Image (cartoon, rainbow, N blue to C red; front, side, top):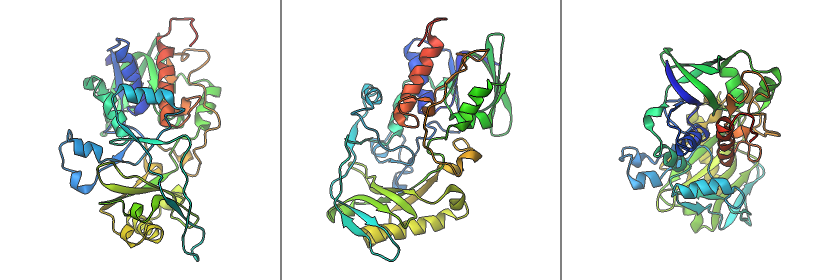
Length: 379
């Protein structure tokens, strides 16, 4: 049994940032347990095919990455996230929105151009994609403290300690003991994938189970090109469609690298899962050709990321749900053995930005403050 003062369940952004905060505070005896074989959680990227074998440290490879999860943020009002990005020395750039957008309202009518608009406040992206934020944190952590391929299935609290049971891909179990646990996985997923002994308070269980998992019902399509040819047509790369399969499309080009378009599917998760990726990609290419011209039909590469098919993101309850979070749930029990020993820090627990990248930062900061505060002090 491995012992640590604090165990973090999940190596997505909130989990890694919590570990960074602990390390900054001089706490080195933490452990991060991640069910996936890779870190990052809902932050994921795709590479152009000719970059797939480039060295991991290649600046060109790291620049030419395209987001399959969260894509942008708004520094004008997500100031804490922007501060973290600045402290890590990451480069950002404005989302491209220059030119007209395209709209299609019916399969029987040709798409029309309309005047585009610029976001206010301005949305920005990171060079190297949102994974640059994950990389920046990981590089400042002790890699030996991060255990991937370890799915936590049981947490038992007693005697002032929590014993966590984690299984690898082969079903082999390992146990960890910690004074506190920071839960960096979506609350609904925690309730369906983990056993808590003793049971969490009923009101807390209900609150966690009722919170939709951000991004879980959605899927994104990404098409990578050599050049952003739509810009030469005076188009911003932005489009809206009532026909589908994509309902919202944006320019996803990397500065100094490949060009790209990405879109969100408007097809429900259970319907998508009845159609092969190959067929879905063909429909997406046809749609892009309708909107942006014949060049769009032949991308260098294209990808689909269906988050509803990710077992470490989506539960059965997320398949037909939306991801609108009306209110963030309580992050810890208000009384009993679990109070302040088990604290939720995934983005869904953020009061101000639930579900967003900025929410992961905020929730992690609140969770770390909770477990580090002196007894009786209120955060």
